[in-house]
Amino acid sequence: MKRNIIALVTGLLFGFGLAVSHMVEPGKVLAFLDVAGNWDPSLLLVMAGGVTVTLVAYRLIRGRTAPLFAPQFYLPTRSALDRPLVVGAGIFGVGWGIAGYCPGPGIAALGLGTWEAPVFVAALAAGSLVYKWLSEGGLRSAPGAAPQR
Amino acid sequence: MENFTPASALIGGVLMGASAAILLWFNGRIAGISGIFNGLLNPQRGETAWRALFVVGLVAGAALYALLHPAGYTPRTGFSPALLVLGGFLVGFGTRMSGGCTSGHGICGLGRLSPRSFTATAVFLLTGAATVFVVRHVIGIQP
Image (tube, rainbow over all chains, first blue to last red; front, top):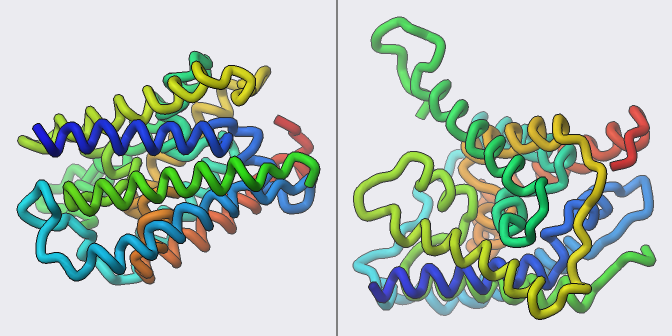
């Protein structure tokens, strides 16, 4: 129960922050990525503001053995700079540059009444599920085909 | 750079960083939106409620801001649905493949000084900028 309240409140804070920073407006994001056009560096400051807080917070939290409301920290364990990381990030960037939404703003925009958000989120879910399917064997019908990870 | 909005960008960024810090401090979780969303697409026991509530909060948070400050949000008009679907699909595919997006790799991973996140962030910024260059300045679509 306590954990669910934290999840709701942090979601609210994140969505509010996205809207405050105008990152829910794809034109604003595309103007940042358009370095050869009328460049708008706002997204850089959004990242700077966010990372400054997480840098300090993680230093403070790191010394704790467990979070306040949960038995353990659930942190990523992979450390390899492997092909899925690089290729996946590359594909993500291409989609981001086409649509102007990354997952956070695309989902948050569902609360703004634009037709774009539900279309984007449906396509987002489809892309994610197709990758999962392919990585688990996908089209290769041969039994025992090794999942990618 | 007349569209540069440094104050709202910094304030919004700090709010997102605070959200990520609280989620980690209290629940031990990374505020990576693609990861939270993917966990809803393939639900596992005990992993659904908090993710669903985070997403509800995310949507409600943006709605709340628009309600309090209607002039603060300008929707895009006339964008191609086909491009939106293509872009959305690639974002979903790529973020699942690389295990994170602008929030998980960007805001959270950079704060954790994760080499994977530095790599991913550099790559998606690069391909994002290259894509916008091609779409706007080579093909000549100005969405």
